[in-house]
Length: 230
Image (cartoon, rainbow, N blue to C red):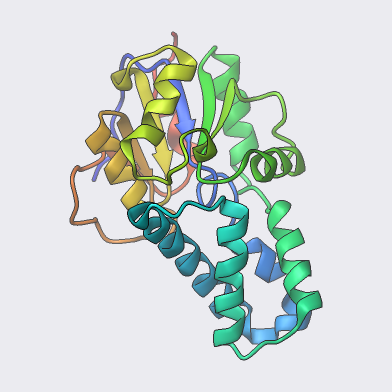
């Protein structure tokens, strides 16, 4: 997909985990304990975290993202043969303070200075998101920080994407939605958002409805793809 110039955008709405915040940073910070297993554990932790969110949504057995994150970590640690309650607690604490990608703060401030509405739409709990935003020095930049806990089901359920429209008072075609998760980007487009897939890891295109409007490798080029004036 090529870069595009989107018109009529009133708000940029960001997925949190993997898009603004580096989900691998918790395990990376614990390399002293994990050694060369840290990346494998980080990858499996993330995979199971998403799988558990989808399975809970399909089965109607919702639990908040903090619980799901802990259960996914338990699976990943057991798979790696790690039985260490203190390390588990350390990793969960580190997850509350995930680092933001380096371009995130400058891009958000630039968009904010233009008068663009900014929001987060995430699977995370309100407490998890508040901690991540504060830790990354992003407090005060967002007009709304929206959690799936308001509707009790995870992305990609349409009721999650609808939250933004209700809170910001805009229409779906006035939203530029950004996610590093292909399934999220494609599903948000199917809902009706304008979507830029922030494909940080060079993933191949998804085979689900519907194709995002454009693709970027990080957020640094975002301002040039949006209206210069609102």
